[in-house]
Length: 385
Image (cartoon, rainbow, N blue to C red; front, side, top):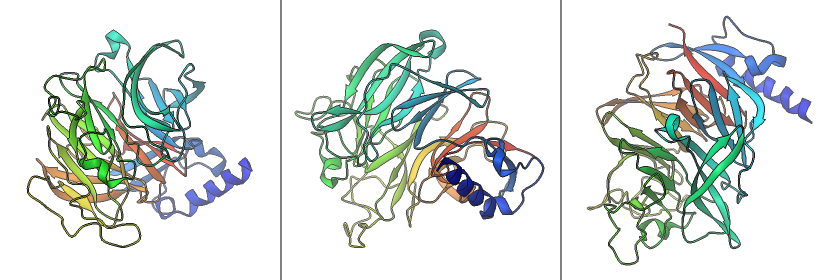
């Protein structure tokens, strides 16, 4: 069976338009796919793509501990260790049990901004609660490859049965506040209800305490960690430390994926306003805007199924610097969004057909990486001009 899967993957890669055009120096045979290299012409530069790994099932998040060591989550509950762009064969041991069904499981991973001093690693995951699950945030340290000093920081409420729309990304701002996203579990009313945690982006201290200046901390019955609401299923967050902007992308239904700048206490509209429709083609609402609700910076119709995101800050990609890259699951590409301040001035589809892109990230040494489902790849984008 494994041999058949690899043959099919090889046929996909070799027959895809991505690989059949502009394949150049460094190409390898199908039996060497972990190291497959090809080049592709984008609008603004030529990119060499190095395939570093090909055996993922459902990768979700990635973070670097240092310039050499990369951690990547598998939704089923594994945290894989890579060094110098190669899988070591090792996985982090001692993680807790996860609620793994549908989109629920082990999700994002990131490090504390002061990781070199304190050693804290943070994960977002679905925790088993009752007969369902809840998005949770925890932190831990590593002793060798084993978890130590594990601390559960926050568990969203109420628990939910099923695996729909768990979020979840984690980012830190310049003051070391932690933001995490949580989907509305497929229940539209959750996103506008401040008495539950779902369909929101949350803000906590790095040790799990609720900040005293959060927008709804004093509202009776409201969840104190809420930072924004009306967010359908936000699977991408990025904090721009130069401009102090919190960027977010979220899934729409059938159309209406959004790119937003999130601001304290604001309502991003779901499901009262949307540019999407129900999956069966029926309307959700006749409103695309309403007073007191925020408009997206841009949106996608049809849906590309937005997921992870990053903002290019590296000098290695001068033509892309300041662009936002958005992982596209259904689109099976990376969306490059050109910006002039907060205005979108253009877009390009990068690497169409590469697989369901779950996350795109920039490494400490300034290179761009992406992970995919379906094709199960870890790829590195290397400018060649």
